[in-house]
Image (cartoon, rainbow, N blue to C red; front, side, top):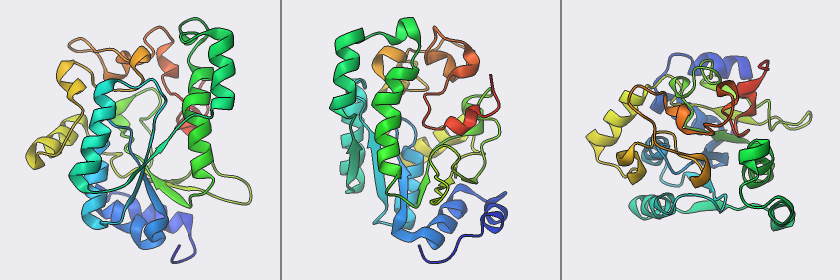
Length: 244
């Protein structure tokens, strides 16, 4: 990190700025200590913007072991397209194997996605973020009106910080709409997950993701058997703060 972090000043600096400007501010403050979170869906816009500002940008993605085949191929396509290393995070087998042994591979349909996501997503992410000073995500306010409408361009990560070690989080695409994201993808002809062409908008694990119908919101394709207000896996747990 190049300089001490004044969170109020940094939040003010990011307010109202373009995604590229927010990323530049992030790089100016954290340099190569900034990591980009790539979900293998439309976060490719974030990766493209970051790579154009810093060819040495650090990128990681979560491999839950339950992704669509198309997503695995897309991750590899992005790696080759940009000539970048993508660090792939995997679940801890010591935690995953007992869950599968005791409850099978589809327990989330009965008792909710929290336990499975906790092992396949949250634990690997927590392990990674324990070594990171700052990270950037592709969260957008229009992705989920119930949980992401107040996403800030910059924040102290309330989910993964510790009392003695704050973690800083940038959401450069917060104010971009889905239409703007896809305009960027088409205009620059950058790679995207082919599942989008089959009605998938929000793409996660294969058993928990399905295409949406016309006029349905994108999050209706995720965890469709659960209450709509809880459609977060926990990667951005702060989005659920204060929600029942």
